[in-house]
Length: 263
Length: 250
Image 1 (cartoon, rainbow over the protein chains, first blue to last red):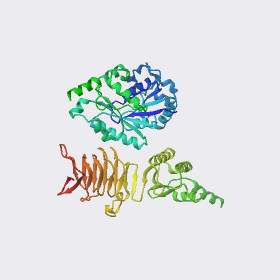
Image 2 (cartoon, one colour):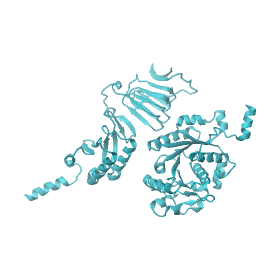
Image 3 (cartoon, one colour):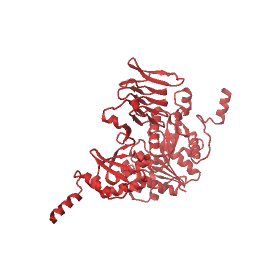
Image 4 (cartoon, rainbow over the protein chains, first blue to last red):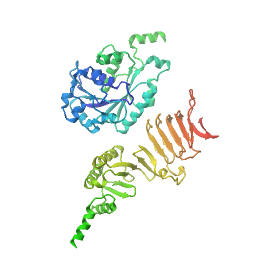
């Protein structure tokens, strides 16, 4: 059975697409699925840094498409998980070095051999975006709870629907529960009612993300991380499992006791 | 005698664009049995493709592939209009056909004709009325059926209607609805709506909730006031009263 090809996109830059790809890939691989992550942000590659594999790059995506190497030569295995692979983007080329048709072909070749193909889309809606969505059958749109990110997410969802990509889900990243309670930040409900796509999951705002990027170890590896746990739950939902939403705050046991006492 | 005959035959077969193109196309059409899969009509403005209602998409694409292969120089880099009045197509089918035309001979489809009054302009990526583009309005907006949009208009969508426009869904920020008549939104209007675009000051904008960036009626523009707005019990209407745009909650 062919694997699922999922593109993680957002429109706006810096909302957490690469972080999502790295963590979802890690979570799915930990559940013993074979996963390939493809970085299509040619010229501004980041997935290799977030995964901690930047020193191991010899060949990249453009080399595969131009025929300079086989895809196995460009795929870099994760340091910890043997069934997680990454294809880096080219740093010294431009986004028009590959075309949507070539991406579509590569994605179908990968989907034939691996359970999940995760595509990290660049910011924007031009050539890079068109390349990234060409081979996908599912899209995850990442947004943060701020007006500009939501506007861009709405535009991107419109473009995805026009490209006949039917399975679109939303990921809300960097939600700050305290600010939502104070009324300074949009709530999950506000965002969903504006964008009208099903929600895959909510990731809370966390300082750990910066640290994990610097170290090159995705948060899904860390048992104690709330953000990592959110990604693990999302991977389970992607897999079809029925994991209930934690809503706007994953308080944990003590948190819920506190709520009972002080309400 | 033989020399003259040779000269004549060579003129007909050479493919110089502009040199009696109409004659060449007609002769090809009559040589086929039954209606051609796609009629290629040439007129003053360019070419129009009229696909046969009974043809499948694959037949149409294959036909155009062959036709462009035979007369590639003739069609190279030309602009075409796709007439779908008798044979409607889905957006993905239109994409496939346009890509094939571009790939084969750099042909650009500039317009897709959907009905006698309505066509989709590929350049502006929006619907437009062919009547509006000619400049003269040959009848009041009420004479034409309203344009009904049956889904939410997301950011970046631009709808232009020669009469009224009804949106069954929300109009999100970044979307634009432009109508020569009224605009009716069966949802929240958060983008931009322009009613009476041709100058009709009696045009109105209706919505379950009007929270837009801007609303425009005829030649007037209005922005919403600061502060929290009251929730309308049923719906809201924007119209021109005393020379300014007013929004009434009902």
